[in-house]
Length: 420
Ligand code: KIV
Image (cartoon, rainbow, N blue to C red; front, side, top):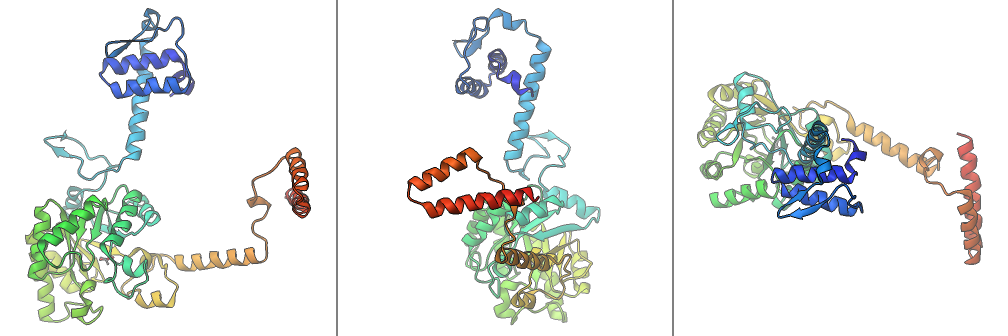
């Protein structure tokens, strides 16, 4: 849009009239405000007066080329729509083919929906899942087109430094969820229900799940385990209208009864339990189930038994998709404690921890030996006149030492700049 044209009173008034004719009073009043803010005045051949609820133009303006007006109006409307869509969260609940929206093709820019996941699953396309805990990790996950972004309670370990996932609270999880929701615009967002926030009753589980969506901005929740009370909780959450991802096999929130982070499904009873639990979760309406740390053969059987996607982690390749923890897959952890908790099944796709370590060491070195900041990173200047005035003021204030320091800095800065 030609900005210059928009500042013309005539054009602003024309827009007002176009929007008024369309009954778009919000835009009309915004344009009026803009005119007032810009201090634009009415001009003699452009009358601008209220007539009831609209604005009237001088007859001259009615003769202005209609095609220009329509182009300008279209451009204004489109740029505003583009602005609004860049501001608003892309919801996965935008109707795709519903009584509200009518048949619509799926916008590739839109958030991944359960329908998209079903389509992938049916066509045997692997589903990609990665965890994220904050805005930058969410932006990275978003940019590469990952299908599901999981705000895992693994945050307890990889972000907060705890030994287990047990200590993280719901309020802490909600902070992570909100940051991720701001950064990840496309993937389906799944928030983990943390330990202690859903085990007491189905009512507690529903209340927590509602908070994860309402306050955390997630699209769905994940809960661990398959005890009857857990299946009942998953059912109640689905009935409350919230999509649920199950999680079986090694369920880290249950290390107290599992006796530590131990793989599951390694004997007949345990392998059968994995399949049974996953089937029970499917029965109550879960849209997907995470299979953690089980033999690939058990994962293959479970995946085959289900009509919903399985997402594997340490469960081999016979799953409908895979999930890894962001920090683990990036090779982010350098601290010996973290090296200890990076699981065996995790493939580091980067050595980001080493890169961070190297950069921090270099920064420390350059600050210590005063090579940072160099002239290249000292962008703000004072003009010679202002410098002289400043030195005089410092002297008047009796700050002779400060004046000498400023004068010396000015010589050394200009020498450095010349040397560039
Ligand atoms: O919390 C988490 O990150 C998880 C994944 C490991 C599945 O539950």
